[in-house]
Amino acid sequence: MHITGHQVAPERLKEFRRIYKEVSGEEITTAEASEMTHRLLTLYRLLSHPLPGEIEKPEGPRALSPPPPAQRVPGEP
Image (cartoon, rainbow, N blue to C red; front, side, top):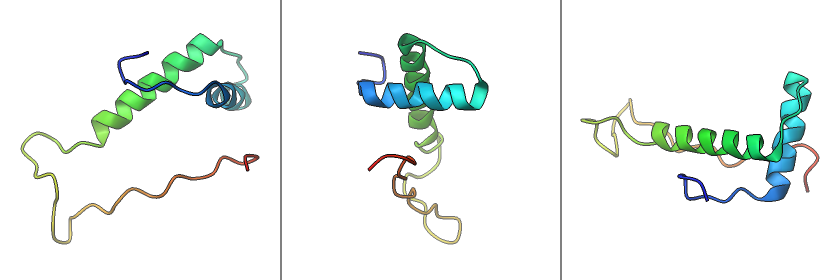
């Protein structure tokens, strides 16, 4: 298990590899896809927290709206 503490499902890695090939034209291994997804999860985790010195639940006109609901991947049920 990676530092993110998440195990990415094999079918998600397969989909990630397919999308990566479609976008970049390059094939990557499952290990490379796993590493990339964990780096993305780590980045998301860092970006989803408030910056030091900011309040966790901002109020007023500058308050952040909640994240959008998860989107479906085309071709998935």
